Image (tube, rainbow, N blue to C red; front, side):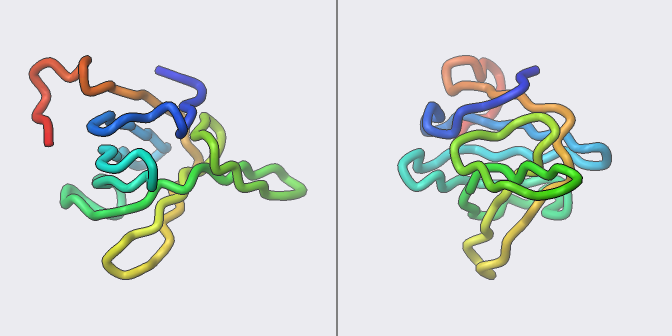
Length: 110
């Protein structure tokens, strides 16, 4: 598990696993320049949705700050779904992991 993932360090076919209190999401990077990928899990169920990863929303009791450069524990992940142009904001992230394309072993790759 990681505490933070730098978005600019992601590469094509990297998988980001995001755990919230009630849901699990997976984001597979297709285009790291635009941070375009396939997102599934949580409210998206097990279907892949084309989405853009737009960073994290850090929520404090007094304010909220958007951080486009990383995902982190205690923040909320921000996605924009391509099909319906809607924003998806996860609940607070309590688990975060990155599986690089070289680490995937037996996992199915795109």
